[in-house]
Length: 430
Image (cartoon, one colour):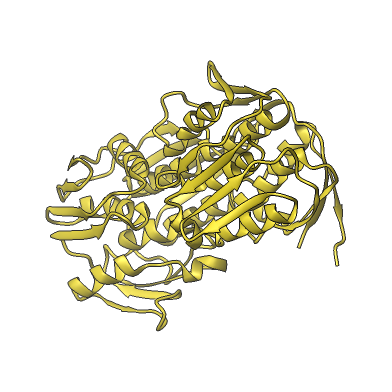
């Protein structure tokens, strides 16, 4: 376990934002399903992206990558040959990989097993189990429904039903797979669809690779079978869930410009700009970059239903804003890499925050500064990066334990933190 001691200091300067992990997963899956050679440029490597590459190679794709001068990875993907080349797919700790790939893997008749690590082992898969039961597919899992999962296809065309209040990853997984079936299918969403923006991202990437899906208000999807993915050359835009850390860092302490951001992005986490503006932040687009400068923000009500990944860093900002910040509709944060509501509450309160944890949200009363001390990252990349940003406004050094977990999504985080003036040292903590 790596422990870092951060000396409070303002961050400022320019930083190149990692590519969108959400878009990267989708591009690589579609490229691997396309017959022929696709090139996907500008992907920032992370443990989750590695997991998706492993999964698609296990199903028959061939993926090569090379690194350019900026450290971004460019991928050459030869796909279209779908079949289980390996009997077990290791999804690491990537929920996107697991839930996206399960329907794709059971297009064929081979028996395939899925395993994972950390909190992924216990993350819910019941919507897929319900589909397997309705279609009579053979599968085995633990009595609690945890990984490892072994399942044998094939899926059949027809009617599929998913509740809208589960992760959109289940919807996306079916949207990847159903166009390849030998028959037409309909996917019906019951109740309110949460995280609609992630479904829209999936549909946009599918359309890029030649897959056509009609929908009615994102509740009914009419999916023609016998479709084929077409190879493409494309590039992945910057990640709004990652730029959020640097935007908040700039608001708390220094002028920061974030490069590589697409103004017309479909990413749901682009809402970070609207939220920061509503809190009084000064955020501006300048070409393909976002710039921000220090300002004292005010508390507001933040609805987490469609942007759960933003909540840890927004909790940091809320804790240092004037008045009260309320986080609502955030229950799904309890089944992420860790219980993020509990984690961010506990760790920020250790250093002087005034946060009350609710079943599905937070109530945060603003303070001027954190005190510093010792906090834990809970093996969660977003908790770690949020606490790093919190150090800017500590009156004493802040020691973080378990900082290596940023590799899940942003391996260069600490390098970028230092490039903006962050001051830290590795230490032995007992």
